[in-house]
Image (cartoon, rainbow, N blue to C red; front, side, top):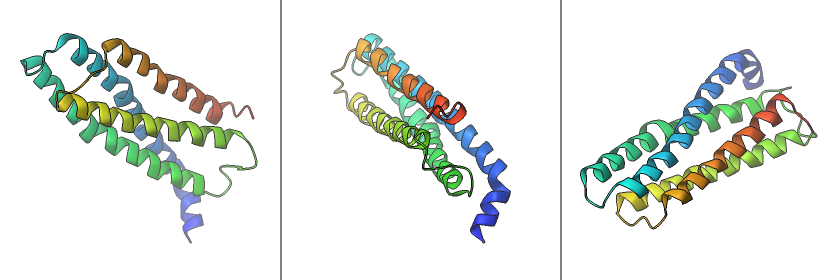
Length: 151
């Protein structure tokens, strides 16, 4: 039965989920920093711009998107493991909303990456510095919801 397997596999599922989250978050923190350099220091068509395009693309396609998918898959396995989450409490709902917000931010990064790739970025380095604070705030909220469970 799937529920028995989920209970048995719980520590492994949790470990993989945590590793995927770490990988995803590393990319989510790093990619906007690359955008800052791209917006402030690179000129359209120069070597720095082309190098940053490759770095941004590989970070997104090789690390961030796969890590996000693994985070979601193993997070949902945790959600379906019997006895792990009490949905009558408020904290899992807040955590879920923050994870959805983080996923939305990830998709915004994809859009911005495509703008840089097509040499049509109109945003400033300051914009990306400020945007880089969004995942930090979401991460703080997620960790507090999971560890402290204040509600």
